Image (cartoon, rainbow, N blue to C red):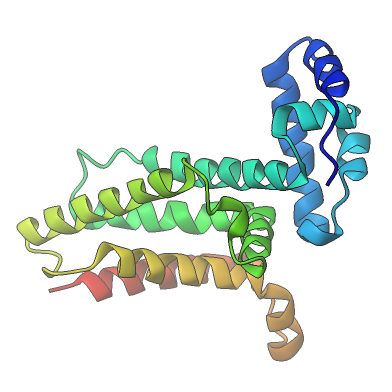
Length: 218
């Protein structure tokens, strides 16, 4: 992609009245476009049209289409991590806190199918757009600390077994929550089962919660 001229960058720098608000609007529009069309199919013009901005403004804030997609991924990962960190588990028994965390994870995936699509697109491209990110790895490591603390506390309380790998536990939780959204359309065609039917959603949520608690049981 051609690098914008210094004149374009200067123009973009002067244009936004509220740079943070402009950046937020661009991220929201870009998230929708990338989720709908993928990275290869998305065009900066599509994003410009949705947010009613200019290409120079986008290039000023993000440098390139690649930089914009990387920023979108950083943003959506941060959203997921903020939800997890909002859990107030200090006053709860470990098993109840774990139940809450798994439920929160399930609910976030269910409510954000675009998040699933964006992560899928990132993996299609080998995660190269976030390979140099300074925020994605540290922010995602936080969940391992939360899980490790819960597992250790549960072991002390006698409700969880010892020696559980937080990363494998994270994989168990997220694989179920992710798959039921990412594959809901093929599942419906093949098995004639609507994974988004309210009663089925409730049963699925309980399935992953109980599965995790049984996996952790002494």
